[in-house]
Length: 200
Image (cartoon, rainbow, N blue to C red; front, side, top):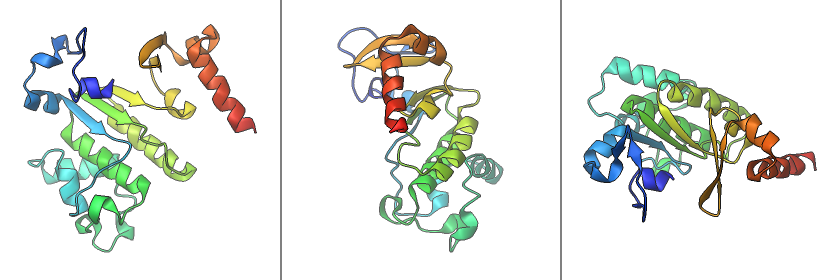
């Protein structure tokens, strides 16, 4: 779904529409302006935290930058770093933890302020403490925009307005979390399977 929305792939039939407009008819630059992505595997350039966040919107003001940093909870770990925002992150952000890299990516998405946001398994590899901090940051970035959350964790899925369950690349069910659990279909089986794993 994310690949289709970002036009990494084009559909072989049907259309992907943003605001009622077929994405295939949009110039690539316009599509990039409309959609922000926080990927599961965040890529950071071997540059400063500041430079990596400013990729979201290079002409952002200092106040806009400060707000994005605060809302994404990047400010929480800056005092631990040798040069704060001007700390070099290393190739692919190697000097930062997974949670820190994710928060930098969220700050970049906040700064971009696109109306559509894709968050791909944003908490899948984090410990509980980092997950809770990141979940709060995610709630901030999702406010006021359409967000596509790609997730397997029940705690992430519960926070959504609408669940779209995919099975073998096709939409199997669409509905609210509790509604789909009660329906006893594909989603309910996935939830039961996760709960069984947690109970072991």
